[in-house]
Image (tube, rainbow over all chains, first blue to last red; front, side, top):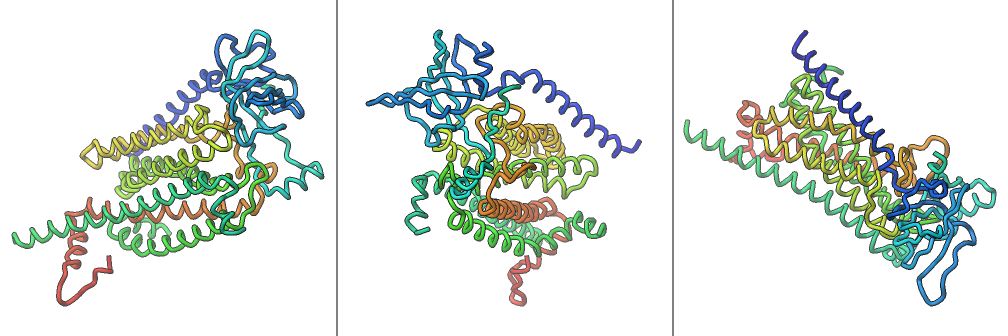
Amino acid sequence: MTPRQRRMIWVAVIITGVSLATFLALAAFQKNLLYFYTPSQVQAGEAPTGYAFRVGGLVEKGSVKRQPDSLAVRFTLTDGNAKVTVFYDGILPDLFREGQGIIAIGQLQPDGLFKASQVLAKHDENYMPPEVADALKKTGAMPTVDEFKGANR
Amino acid sequence: MTWNEFIHMGGYGAYVWSAYGLTAIVLTWNWVSTLLRKREVFKALQRSLKQQENLS
Amino acid sequence: MWSFFHKLASPKHFYRIAGAWIPWLGGITLLLMVVGLYLGLWVAPPDYQQGDSYRIMFVHVPAAWMSLFIYVFMAVCGGIGLIWNMKMADIMAMTSAPIGASFTFLALVTGSIWGKPMWGTWWVWDARLTSELILLFLYLGYIALQNAIEDPRTAARAGAILAIVGSVNIPIIHYSVEWWNTLHQGPTVTRMDKPAIHSSMLWPLLLMALAFQLYFFTLLLMRARVELLYRERRSRWVRELMGNLQPSPLSNNREVI
């Protein structure tokens, strides 16, 4: 075996070893790397109750109720299967609107209300001019929102 | 699009222009620092060459 | 074909050939950037959801792509340097690190500037953002390693191993948005099923990406030439080259270099 071949084998061994270790580490940490829970997971009792976590879903159409004279707002998050009602008192991101993907950070109250301390908007990976979006909506060819595709995993 | 709209960026002017400005600064700095390093190396090499010539 | 690559691997020829390429590469880079910026900032329409703020994409996405590409490039050069003891590969890996670090920094900061108005936050610890931050630390670690080790041969070997080991982070960054629930949205351009971006917005994005790519190669050649000159300072060809540079009454061929 020439020295070059030996070096080649060493490089190959390092690459496979590190890849394997990373793969195992990722598989082990899969749960902790979940950035948010879906309403289905919350309903199934998978979300923690004692401390703050994140819940992600679409703002249900017609569910946004603002309190007069304050920033407080109440809306329903859905992933198509389950719903979570969120209460939030603060400034909403520019993208917040009905039908929009939202991630709320806060705690689940004993009565099932999710009290959020922060609300983040999650936008999708589609980019197009407004006219094109309108045309697509009319023909029903608008790309479906799959940003919460992890919902039923 | 008009100049005003261009600068204003639909209300996001501060965000858009700071992102582009920062990119311009970093890309320019990469280039300038390369030229500075080139000058530094050239000067050092010429100096050592001159010393060798003086010695011989 | 092969003889051309062998010539490139020889320091003297690399110096000459790279010197001839730099003005062309730099010129095309500038041209692409001007056209890309014009299309992206002036011609392209606003987005139906994000308004004009989405235009940050035209620098953010190419910078992020380059941060990944340059790291892979470094790891490949490092591997070639380890196996074949090729001096040019060592120099390429070493000189591309600061450029890669600056692109990673840009991707993180422009993403942050984009995230504030759209997501409602400058930063979140989701899988995409966190893995990109780890990439920045990998670059900084590599640069620190190069500066810490005096002997260029040892520095190149240590750097190559760090680059190869660290490259497992690259697929993690790319697939993070698919493997985990993240705040960051999924891939737009590499999606196969349907066009996720209108052509009026895709063109400036691709032009800027190509411009950033050529910018990297231009700077890489410039830096590699200087580094090569320094490392070969005791060799004959460098002395001859520098000897020609001495100001003399007969010839004033400074521009040759």
